[in-house]
Length: 302
Image 1 (tube, rainbow, N blue to C red):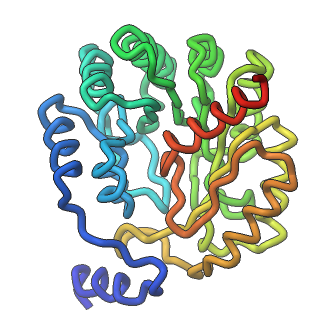
Image 2 (cartoon, rainbow, N blue to C red; image 1 turned 30 degrees about the vertical axis):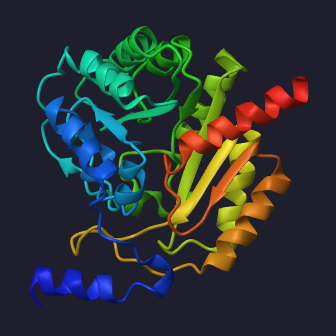
Image 3 (spheres, rainbow, N blue to C red; image 1 turned 135 degrees about the vertical axis):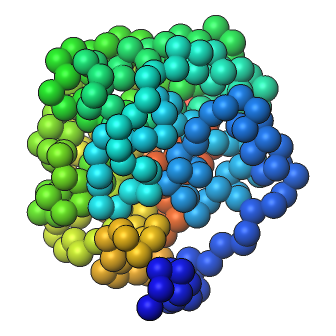
């Protein structure tokens, strides 16, 4: 079977609750044109996110800085692996211009892994945060960073820039790390999240995981407990979807009712915010979720 035929077969096998409309609204086209004009990469495109039509129609895009080539080869990820090019010093300014032009209330900034850089790209994240604060001071900023493994001082550097939300995904259960996240460490990811809270307890921390890779229910519940023990405030839980026949297979399509159940369990664990559904991704509805949390806190203080 050819790769194109196999990919089409995989799509046809998706259950009814995983069907999405093809993008094409005026808002989607406007966002796409702005991203192209400012020469920005987005995880929406590079990772083949199924929510791109909905998010871009609302003029919400997750910008991926530091290029579109990753130094790691995770089994689930659609981003290219190889030797990245040099860091673009003009990227933070272009990113800030896009945030201002789109009038974003909340922006999510992520990146590829840059193990080739002495600081893993931490300084570039800081430059992006500072540029956005200059050009769009009313926009709240969420960073979704790599693990910065073996990069001393990188976590501290980004945390000192005071993003409103510091996000780092554990992605899956520890037993599956060698297959799903080669080069990463579950213990290190938990330590990163805990370290951010140690540095500034006012910064919200966030993490997420994918289901459908062969994890067991008890393992998922253990991850939720570990995240709370590390001080994580927000958690996202979504369905893994295979980007191509070259990526890890989907072991199971988790029905919506199970995501609802996990949402209730996570809320009972004490997370301030829980997003759990087949289409949930790290930045899916992140703007609305963060705005709702701020409004609730302000109402409580009133």
